[in-house]
Structure formats: C-alpha cells, structure tokens
Length: 282
Image (cartoon, rainbow, N blue to C red):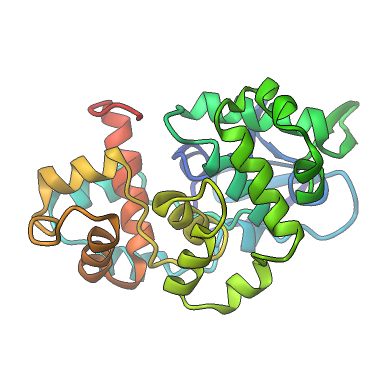
C-alpha cells in the first residue's frame, strides 16, 4: 500500500464522530467509493496506509483537511471546561471535506435517524443506483449521480428505507440536475448565501444546510444545531438565552461566540456529548 505521513490526525475519531457517511469500516481501516474510485485507508501511528482502485491521485490531504491549523483552531475555540474536555477527548479530530452530493443526501436522510440507520440508507442507495467498482476481489458500489436519483421513483427510494425522505431526495436531486442549485456556485458564495441557497432545496432545513456547508463546502464557521448541541449549549453556556428560539438567531449567537472556527467547536462538542450517551439522537 501507499503511505502518507500525517501530523495531528486521528482517522478513527474523524470518521466515527458522525460527520461523514461516505466512509465505511473495512477490516483495520475504512473504505470510500464516493470519490470517483475506491479508496481504502488505515492508520498506523503517524502514517496513513492507503490503496486505490485506479492510478488517479487521491487528494487525502484535502479530503481530511490535513492542512487545517489545528493548534490555532483549538486555541481559538477553547473557552471553558466543557470545550476543553471535548478537545481532550478527541484532540486530533479534523472536519472532513466530503463530496457534495453524497454529503447532502446523507444529511437529508439523517432526520430522526441514528448513525447506523443513515449508513444503511446510504448503502442501499449505492447498491441500487451507484457505479460498481472491482476492488480487492469484490464489487464495491459508489454513490450515484444526481441524475440517477432524480429519475428514480419515490416508491423505489422508499424501498431503500428512506420513508418520507424519499420525495425530498428525488426533488432535491432534480433541482441539482436542472441547475437550480450548483455546487460550484455555492463554493463561490459567502456562508450565509450558500446556507440560504441550500435551504431552497426540498427537504433541506437549517441544520442540514449547515452540515453540508461545514462537511462538504468548507465553511468552517457553520455551526449545525441539533438536539445534542442544543442541550450542550443550554447546560454549559448562556449564549442562547437572549437570542430567541429561532435557529437563525442561535446560529448567529454560536458563530459570534466561537468565531471563524465554530464548525470545529461544534464537532468537538457533538462527539464528546454523544460519547457520554446523555442525550437522545432525535
């Protein structure tokens, strides 16, 4: 296998913290077929060992945001006890840079579903409509393009476990095919404009839009707020007290408090709170 030396990076924490559904556990590492090829990665100390299904270069440094200044980020967001505990729990966790469409669909499917259920839905979609690759003597399926899901019937999508989410996934895929929402244009926008544009897609609310902004489009100021984060903030901070109940006002408050790396603050808090098992998933 090829190798890549890394600094301040933990593969397991980065993949298992709930921010990505493109990587699947495989033996001692993880496999991803949503990058235009199949990539297998495992970590041994400060080295990533990886294998691919073709000779095209795999931008693992970009995929795992290995150039992010982690020391600066953690200094910037460290405020008090719970944040320090969260960073200490997974100090080498990094925010991912996932491909746009799989990231979007996975978080559209995440409403009131736990992490294993989301992985099952994504796996079902891959097997039904995705491209097939030969890798290590077996067939591995990648995520389909928007065209495939736009053409799929709602009934077929429901059969993959999507339930009420099926019609929204189909409609969102259609909007992307028609160019109503463009990944390239989203990347050129300011965070607030990209967030608003994503919400124009059927089935995409504030939290899903923030997840896509953070985990795919690279807006590190995005601060997804779900029940876990809501309760962490309520229990340890007072920044939501005067903001009102709307998601938008809470988002402004969180971004104002944690700053330009709010997304990292969110992910550390989220991963740590889930590890404690204190709050429900939905």
